Image (cartoon, rainbow, N blue to C red):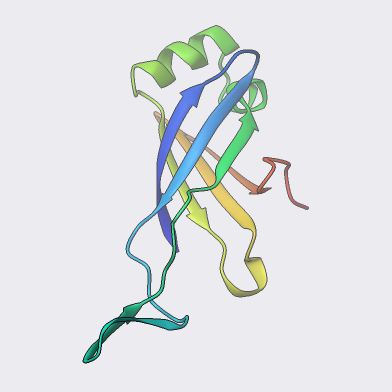
Length: 115
């Protein structure tokens, strides 16, 4: 499942990624709206908050951390986050694009590289 991303910087060297799920397919229980209608009971959706070491990303893209932060703020580095499903549930694939360079990391919900 693909998820939209919001990337922001926090104190220190972390890149903060918030994956917002797009449209979800309903597979859970239904809740009653009235006597004749039901709707999916999706409950409140809270996007996962994932932090990935920005210094690692910067080095991997051949950038200094300060330049990486600057390019992120200018939205010159694109980020795609994909949420794992099935056997990969709980994992996320974050791909950072800058010019002709690409870094792809598979991380858990704590931002630790899975492997």
